[in-house]
Length: 309
Image (cartoon, rainbow, N blue to C red):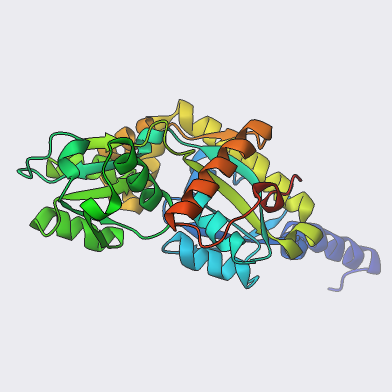
């Protein structure tokens, strides 16, 4: 038995229709997006904003902001998220990157905690102590601002420059007395290891993060970047109203208890913000001060680092 030409055409046409979604998916434009564990990918997936994208995302995983920014500078990725001072530091060195959208967390998300038994009741007790911190970026700057606020010169403390994993071990073993950290590390140390909160950076730092893109991506993929920015903003709006759900969605990935993440997300209070004149002025003040501290290697004009899609 043979098919008629009409039957063959109908069959082939049906097969083509069935294949169309996969074909269209393969032909869709691609955006190369950087992710840090518990970052953009988790937010978009938990909030449902990853659904029905008009483009494909190729995810690239990074352990921290610094290697992410190196990849962005080299145009190995199109876009990624990082803290404001990490971004400004790399931009000031001449990297062809721009911030395209921003979020703000509460200043309490950056804090100094002390180990149990250290005898540090408040920020004044940090004088003469050994404090762990990560060089550059948020908590380097926030530590110096906290010390400044309480009349302590940087030379009056001993700063041990350690990345989070090493700093956590140093604090718990007593090798350092305190640790300048950010969420969710703060909540983990307080809830799981009985650390005490010494001081936080409320009113001392913008606590902003940027979605930043390479200049070439801005020229060639602006509609995709605009859509991603909108979905990230909607994702943070969802997260603010669904903190327990968001904590449960990320607990396994981050290998941290749900109560730790719930506390961290409440303290963070992360939300999308407009890149307006007031925000730019605040970032400029912080960037100037960070340059004076040596956190940012070169002075910069913040407006040069911003691209409005």
